[in-house]
Amino acid sequence: MTAPMLTGAHFRLALTPEGWRRNLSVHFAADGTIRETIEDGNPAGLPVYENPVVPGVTDLHSHAFQYAMAGLSEVRRNPVDSFWSWRDIMYFFALTLSPEDMQAIAARLYLALLKGGYTGIVEFHYVHNDLDGTPYARREELSLAIFEAARATGLELTHLPVFYAHSNFGGETPTGGQRRFIQDLDGYHAMLDSLRAPAAEAGHVLGIAPHSLRAATPEEIARLMQMRDEMLPGCPVHIHVAEQVKEIEDSLAWNGRRPVEQLFDIAPVDDRWCLIHATHLTDAEVGQIARSGATVGLCSMTEANLGDGIFPATDFLAQGGEFGIGSDSNIATFAAQELQQLEYSQRLRDRQRNVLASPGQPHVAANLWTRAARGGARAAGRPEGAIAPGGMASFVELTSPEPEALLPVDPEACLDFHVFSGRGFHVGDVVVRGRKVVQSGSHPQEEAILAEYAAAMRRIAGRLDDRKTR
Ligand code: NGQ
Ligand code: ZN
Image (tube, rainbow, N blue to C red; front, side, top):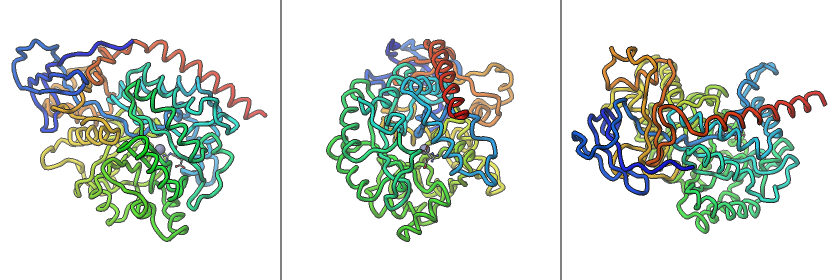
């Protein structure tokens, strides 16, 4: 059931690329983009939003299944736990999931993301094979489970089937725990090809994603670029890069180049690329990424959870770099949490406050939100994420269960309240590409989605118990 297409809306207060605007009539085009915005008295009689409205953010990096792992990896099991010991638990967990579970988890997650300020998602999808590592009869089975979750919730999907072939730099043999992820180039080609028609039919963007320079060799990445030219010219390309210090060390040990240096050596990185994490950068790399026009995909909550390190956001923004935000392991589903953590990481490092503001936008939350919405849309291969002509008609109405709490706050600081007060983040309507997907905080499929998720979690808990006691 798809909600009807709206023709426009009138906002009392809306966050636009030029800052907050009052009494803004926004007219939508038939393709779900914004045709025109006019400050007026609403002569067209468009539906009026009294609450503030912000552009919907595209979550530019998610591994949906990891949403169901929350709480499983916060116990110290080694003298020193790390990203790598977390990854072992994640591999173990990935071996419990059926296609039905994948769909139920993704739908539950996407519902949460819609209520967390996101109107789109880029799913970096690498669990492809059956439990024993053989492809499903329909190779793209698990991708189709993701498509179904996007359909059921109305979150706009950019789907990135991930190419994953090795366990470390230099084409090392994959481990048994990685067997559900592994494909050769022919298998990947076949999967991409079979996904093209269903993606086009459902309006999903398809893109290409070598998992990392650890999981794909330079030769393989060159082949992926040929497949892109042949099948999906100009599509988004995403890759994990430079997240962990050990990754930098392994890269240097392999060929004397750091991961970002290697990537620029071998690939035509431009504004269609998105570098996920890019946490550990030299000054030269910061400049190189900013100049390339690539978007950096910051996943601040997951990066903090995994103990990755601190991205040099102040330097990168000062050099004109573009970024978006991703929920990655999905331990947080609110865009506000990601932005808060991003700002706090810089404050803790620099011992300053209000670091990621800009001369044109001194409100930290408004500055970060505007940029993250723009960067997310770019990385997803969508029209601009902005309440402006040509942008997507995707927006989120902010509400508060205690409106009096905001009375002392200047209306232009309302997003600062929502991002930095820690009192939850409440949405009224959520409109995705001109269609009302959430109405006054409720989603029409909510009950069914929660019930299917609960059933999936019962199945998964049973399988985890079997494996522990065996
Ligand atoms: C992932 N997650 O693919 O889920 C990765 C871990 C890896 C993050 N990098 C696996 N946050 O990078 O090897
Ligand atoms: Zn990731």
